[in-house]
Amino acid sequence: MKYAIALIILMNPILISVSGQEADHRLFRESGMMKPFLAEMRSPAFKGELAFLNKLDQNYYAGDISGRPLMEIHLGTRLPVYSLVNELKRIGFFTGGFIGNVLLIDMFEQTTAPVINTDYFFGFQAGLVKYLDQPYIRNIGLLMVPVFHESTHLGDEFSLHGYQEIPGFTRINVSYEAWEIAAVINDPGNLETNLLSAKAGFHRLWNHDRGYYATDSLETKGMEVPASTKNYACFLQLNLQRTGGFLCSENWMQVISAEVSNRLKFSYEPGFPEKRTWNINLYLGWKCLVEGSGRNIGFFVRYYRGINPHGQFRNTDGFRYVALSIVYH
Image (cartoon, rainbow, N blue to C red; front, side):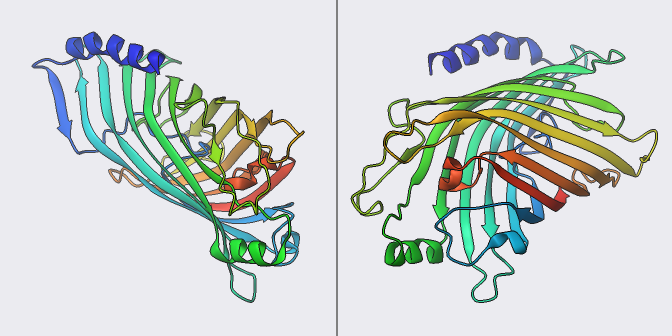
């Protein structure tokens, strides 16, 4: 907590210097600054994905999912509050919130097409961008998320079946608050040109003692579940966009986006400690650009490998996910 407060204090004199008569101030309007990269795992973009998984959870009751596709739906939005751009000093600042959720649905299961899991998240963020307009480095930036909350929920049918039919079934309430900080080179913003961007970030829990999840004896049938003790994660994101060259144009931007993260594999069994795991999330495809729209639709192939990122299934590693994705971003 003290590190986040110190960064906010350090940013205050910078904001004072940015503001002035030459600054363009905006309230409740999207600035375009520091939008999430396509491969960001908790992004408030709209996505619909037809996915094939190698495995899910040993307690899932609706047959073998390896033979049929599942649906993953992302819904969310950014909530801009205030931004300013000082063209003379070549500096921009923004602040606002975001909210979203991720649903995993067994859409093609023939009996009830159950919702398997839902993850909800929201947060508050602030960012500072310095525009350089050098040949390869167009800008540098700092993004802070002082408040981030996530909670996850198994589908009702999944939970009811587990309580009634599976002796060792447990429901884990993954719910936590965290803060994040990230450094950005070449924030794409509203640029629609060839650009390689990078973001490196660090995530840490506010409440170290509580961990990432809590349990209720009624939901674990009295079984002991070890508490989560590790409390941080880190990530590196790369985003390549191209509107000039082979297989792209001014109307069809090619995007290759990747996130490599070191996150925690949970453990719910005594004697099996939680551990850190490397994960990769990759998108490759094209986005149709509509002038002045702010948001554009894209068509992508997605590949993910690592721990299962859905809800309480984050105790499962060796998870592979391949999908066809439509993104409104």
